[in-house]
Amino acid sequence: MTVESVEAVEVKAEDTQMTEVSVSLPEEEKAVEKVNEAKPKTVEKSSSYREESNFLSDLKDNENKALIELRSKLEEAILRNTLFKKEELKKETASESKEEQPAAAEEKEKEPEATDGAAPEEAEPKTEGEDKQSSSEVEKPEEVVDRDITLWGVPLLPSKCAEGNDVILLKFLRAREFKVNEAFEMLKKTLEWRKEFKTDSILEEELGQDISSVAYMNGVDREGHPICYNIYGVLENQELYQKTFGTEEKRNQFLRWRIQLMEKGIQKLDFKPGGVTSLLQINDLSNSPGPSKKEIRIATKQAVGLLQDNYPEFVARNIFINVPFWYYALNALLSPFLTQRTKSKFVFVRPSKVTETLLKYICVEEIPVQYGGLKREKDTEFSIEDGGVTELVVKAGSTETIEIPVPEVGTTLVWDLTVLGWEVNYKEEFVPADEGSYTIIIQKGKKMGSQEEPVRNSFRNNEPGKVVLTIENSVSKKKRIFYRYKTKNCSSF
Image 1 (tube, helix red, strand yellow):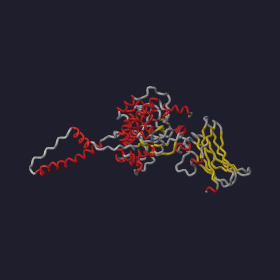
Image 2 (cartoon, rainbow, N blue to C red):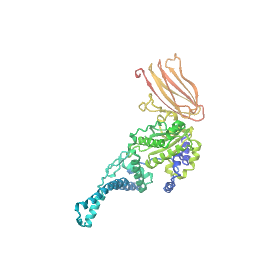
Image 3 (cartoon, rainbow, N blue to C red):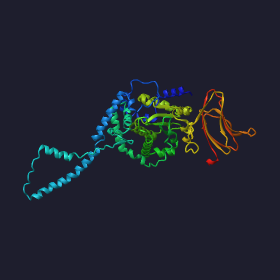
Image 4 (cartoon, rainbow, N blue to C red):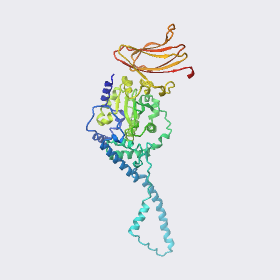
């Protein structure tokens, strides 16, 4: 499949949307109406989403003006102690007044006893100014202004001139299309939710759920975005499903675990202009439980709702792989509810095009082997320090060979190789430098099907020579080959 055809798949994918989002939309009709009203008047033809710059010099005039206004509103709210609701303060004041009332009543009862029947002395009338002063002294406790409020480790008080402050504010502005009041309200609600949910301490929690196979962080893309994988197929396991979603308590535990994973991903970000400030999400829908599973619908609705409301612009792109047909059909109905900006972040990929599409965004050495890349879990052979991967193109109906010299006796050669889409004949041999010696077959020639995983093999030589990898492409399309190798001599062991 050519790059142009992959882009065509992405454009078509704009008419679809992910199930998790679709679950929460019908119950928030007012929010949907606001989203529809806020849609851009001009819709670009391209579905490719590009992150905006966070450098102030790159902002448009209206964007810069909105940022300045939001800074001002935030500064005023922090210094006037109006950023958070005053409910807690009111409760404390009410409880104090309740304690004072019995004490005042007791004093009133004691007063007649002290006079021994004499008429109580009339209190001198207070002037209006004194009355107001005493009233204000009782009613207005001294407020402490918290100038050290932070969000994701970044000080929020604009006058502190923290480097990441503008980057954080721009996230909320972009999520609300630079409508300052809406962005400010979203920021306030996020801060209130974090207090209630105790998000700032969630990284310290031991949640006790062994569900790391459901979602995990692994590697970075070509632009440095940390990658979060969501693997829905593992939930076909009934034991794991019940353990994760079986009861409301377990669903709430899953919710905290999912927010914790998001916070771990944010720890890898850099809130500086020019830094990486968002994640790449890959959602594997292979063997995923369908929309009929009530418990997962409830849990994902809650999770997606919290992530959408409290983590604005934290996902650079959402890639859905191994997408079943029913997913396209279901989400096509929901496209009208979504803005072009939201839809442009989604890429939908059929099972046969997974590796090809992922390569557009992720280097092959960062793509896990189960998706056609070279990255293996807990790999002891290759690391980033070993250098990059070489790409080779085999034209239709032709054969290419990769020759790896092994001049020293006792050297162990290790190599990785993958062919995009496979459907080739492949073999491995060791050819000695001495013409009188025999060629050693490492891997006899065989037809490699389209579902083959990448090859990893090794060979230790007893004489100088070379390892030859042969790829024969008999089909009518060119093939892309990715390979790497390293040598280890005796002293390496």
